[in-house]
Length: 568
Image 1 (tube, rainbow, N blue to C red):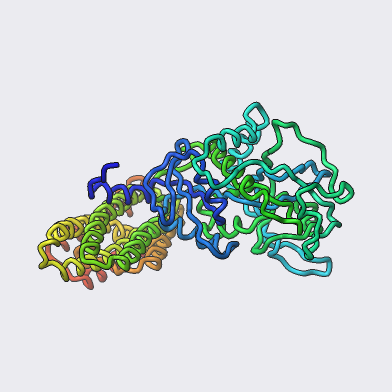
Image 2 (image 1 turned 90 degrees about the vertical axis):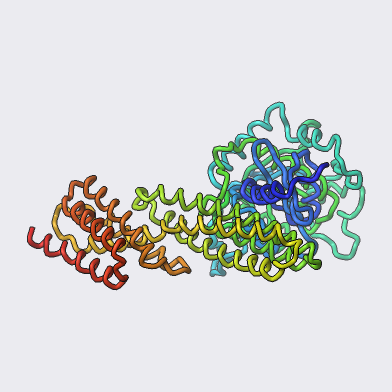
């Protein structure tokens, strides 16, 4: 394979952060191996951390789990890190092993190797002790409707000729791995709930032969072509393994839980409901004391096959490319900075450091361009602020916050270039530094949007409080929302606004918007104020009036409506 040009490598690194919209999360190595064995079209990947690829029309990233502990803490860490590196992720699939809760009475005939897809996640260990026993207080966490619809659509499909068993057989027919066998184990034993596991090594579940029939639940045989099935239902999530059959039966009866696992709730909390999350679990045991590893590999594979099939029922209309919220924009910038610091520690030689700085500066240009585009889009949303105040306020604050982080990051890179600038080998880095500064300057110009929003909030808010005329009352709530936008944005942002010159530009735009508002509402007072503000701002811009004089003028101007309204 020929090596990509350096410019395309930087572009590819930046693009892959924004293009991956599906995160495939696995905690155990067995779960990871099963997921990466599937025929997923491979793309660029950081081999130490992730595998990137495509499933249908979706670009997917699968994390490579490390060794050690598992459960809520590790799942939360994996989800947080993945969302930081790939801020465009909008769907999270938690794919791996789970313990089944079979119940013949409720038609939940769950067998080993079956797959459970969650329609809700219940944190069954979060609650309180009462006189009547333990009561779960945590509300169920549900996947978004489009993922539930996809799960039901897949479930109906698998009831026809395209069975889950057939999909698994196809997936495992020509595996690249020769060290793991994904053959279906023969022995599937469900012990009666009163048959507890013996810890002395003599338990009947340890043998290779079936246990006595009196110890097992009598279940009807399945058809040879339907040995594994998919179920949709409630999944119980806690930070510890459930290995007690009677507790399993109680929760299955009272909460309708059909599967138990340890990660789903933590991932959902980590993504703060901003990512559509669903868990897909291959059943490897029955959540009792008779646990073993015999079914782990096969159950991990059935879950992976089902997850891949599920994505085939999720339309691309349910995802958008690029960062979709203010929090994602922050994560994009922070993720780039974190990766640079990590790679900087590894750059032990001058050659490695120089290449690292060149790559970082090239990515800086792309980052500044992207933030500028986001700011331009926000400028186009100014007429929708009243209807979607919270979203616009968050994005405004995020853009300003990210521009501050970019300036800090750029300063670090420029210092590295200056420190080594006399060396001939750093000539290319100097050119890239100049390009990065030009990109940052364009980004700064786009930040004028922030001042426009703040000034409009202040002017219109104070005008709304001043107006008492009945004609103006329908506008008061609208104008108060403008004030709230300004207040929230100012509170969220970490950087002071620009100087008097930038405020003049902002005021000119604000005056134009005020004139438009007066024309749209038919309130002559607003139009007159807009004209007067525009004329004054234009004179002030040309004469260089001080900021204090400007504030005095605004205070005087906004005192006029009260007198006018009272006179009316």
